[in-house]
Length: 237
Image (tube, rainbow, N blue to C red; front, side, top):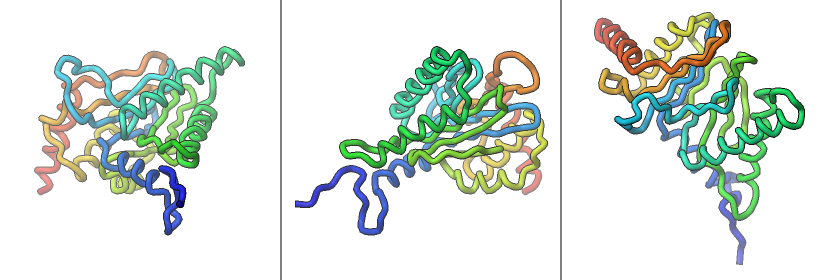
């Protein structure tokens, strides 16, 4: 009898379970990381609205005062990895009395994600991550295969390929405000964007030129951006 595990290579040399995990991410709500000239931005589209927690972030997580991450994919898988990430940050500081670099943190977790694509009695994690570091002014990503990259702009989730292609054409010297507008403008070309969707978006602004905590954009501010994007679209039609 042949022996199969959840990550056995098929006749074409592909790992079906890994492809299923990546498909989970591709079908998930869109997540975006963007590097502007004066800050870092995380944008997430929520799957549902929790009326009692209108200002609670659902896709964006704080790892420590310097590092944040946005997820796209299976929430349960993401929570497991986020717990490990926070522990790794604390352990590194305890051992070396210094902040772990974003690259070291992402490389460590990528090894764990890759492990679950290769060993028996395991399955790949169905989630991708976009990390930012205020102090390093850097964006990095990690997908279910454990592949890591550094970006100026990156999207995971629904319509990610076309969104990422549009990012290539954007100017690199956008302010945070301009970048948020352009991100919503790009998303609006790929999926429905209306005022009623505004509460389903979450935006985190990290100013890399000034001290202070990151800011969560208020739903009212997002609504104004959505209105402006819609008005521009209608005028062009």
